[in-house]
Length: 102
Image 1 (tube, rainbow, N blue to C red):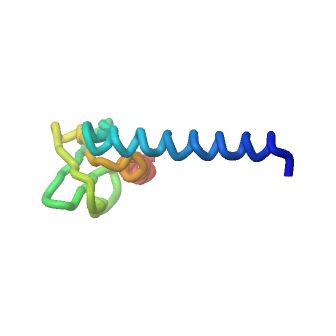
Image 2 (image 1 turned 90 degrees about the vertical axis):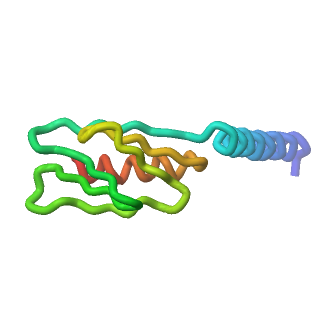
């Protein structure tokens, strides 16, 4: 193998590991949060314990379990905030909620 190819590979690997470490450090020290708002007649969120109830025009309410390591705070009937130390979990849970709303 060419030494330049190896150098490039090692530099990219270092950048990836260092970037991941920065996000882990940020999450532990400050945490990540994502806010969601729901719009529509009769649409609302209800947080009870580690369950999130979504009333979004279906014939039944959608009940979602909040993953371990995350917390959901209800600001109003139509707004919630998802908080946690893992950015991937926070954004993935927010995307799952948006999937039900669309």
